[in-house]
Length: 316
Image 1 (cartoon, rainbow, N blue to C red):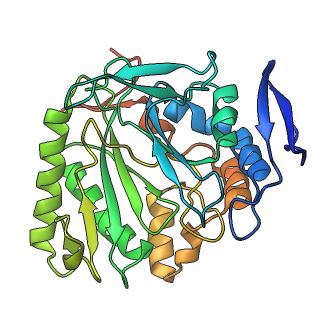
Image 2: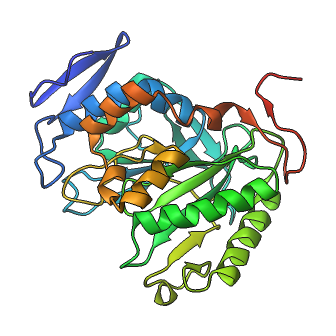
């Protein structure tokens, strides 16, 4: 599919479906990266991104006037959502009307979302219809300055070892901002009532063992120079930035990208954080060489809380 043309408004044919495109030449980042370039990136990365977010309810994070202006989160599908964009009703925790979340299940829906200046894609950890069954155990590593993404990688190695001790293999991605996330795929019949306590226990144990490097408390006052392990992502009402999503945290877009553990060790050894901070074009070049390093997150079935043999999807 060709890059989006710089017209004020038109329809783009996406897999036979006309998707309205408005103001594609409008800059959404101070660097001049436009809405059309955002749409084009999501079209080019779709083969890797869509399998990771398909059937996961998504919270939209929209930047209608770019990253330097006000943004807003949108949980309920907008009133003007086309009938061909699938949605799913999720009950509110406190009661009341259900929240009708958007599902970005196909390329036309993804392009529609990008045209809304939904720069960042924030999916649930669970797929519909069972929104109480997380597909992965997740840790969000957030560095308190002057700690950075390299410090997160070092703590990521500790988390990796902790997960392996309970029989869980994990995969890492940078957040596209300043931190990173670890995913231990489950893809089995578990609930947040099981994953959340384990995540908290692992995070608090590492904080006790490495008090000069790790915190597990939410308070920002205790984070400077340390890495906060956010275990609370393992909740039915939380979302985590999607792998391959753009971020809106800097003057130019960066991408939330998976890296192998060997690559993370090499970046730490070289003390080169720039190795882990890639923009859209660099990210697209990279995935052509590496393929989808997060494919196992979709396929790997792991028993919870560990200690038993893991098995691939579809095996007996």
